[in-house]
Image 1 (tube, one colour):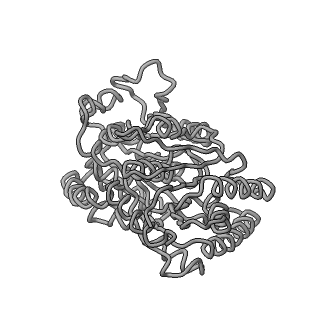
Image 2 (cartoon, one colour):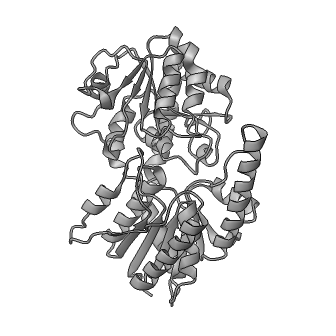
Image 3 (cartoon, one colour):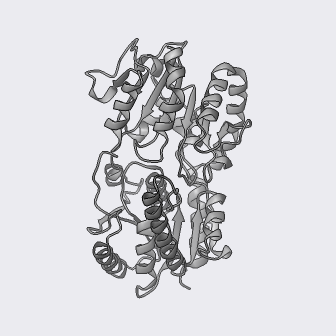
Length: 420
């Protein structure tokens, strides 16, 4: 049966890897001629939004993506709001009658799958795991008990949701392994589909977006060693680890510079910590001009930037540091390799499937600050080896992470499960 209408459901349409994956899927499917709908909860906070991009999108024949705000679809666990979100999603599904419901993120994935499965008629129900919903057990005993209880709740909810869908897409093999180890779903439900991205801007700099120009605009010199991050300023993204691991080295090496791209709820705390450690800070988005020629600061924060600026900003880096504690497969790692930048990342979830230690990057045991410091120091002192590893990773990522490959893989999965 031909696929006519597809409904994607995501918890929040903020700037983030899973959201970008979802939007690119919607755009690619609209270009194939499908009637594409996108539902999401209220958007708020400092993380930014992809809504404007979605609303502006048009195919060459004028086809758009229809958006739906689900008022009670929120990130926090709330029995009352969650029950209302379930009813809102089921009403939406039965009203627009999609052939495929494709859910993303944990909260939308749990509620959306159950609402889809119980709708009449029942559409093909697909879910993508972009990252694990389970939190690391850490902190004082009371906090550990709270996290363990939350993980147990999510495990039970994910098992229930897996029984209410036809197929589960993993962005990394590690996600399939982790979920099956927790008794979530059956092996036949899972397929790995790499998270596609628009690779061309990373491969081909636009005028004025070459490495030398961008570094000059940011105030970096040719001799600076720029350690960049692209991540929300939020828990488990590893900014604290970078400061703790590198503060002495930054004070001892004035040419070492941090470039943080992003914003989030932890902004003020992290910048205060940096200053307390003796690291000078420049906040680009509060400066009168983004041209900072010769800025002496050792930490430059861009704040929120449009996704279209990320390729140029990556090219300004010498290494991408991604010490995140929770990931599916972080998009910023293949993006760095596409831009000829070496990733240095924690060996977390699916990260090692792209950042292969001493082959396409440096992979560091999660939370190991001396190892993180050593890997970054090694990269600073081994430019030739760094370039060779980056070249290897660049060639792998050109094909593995194309949007076209992702969209076609999803088409194949949908076709196996639509009503006949």
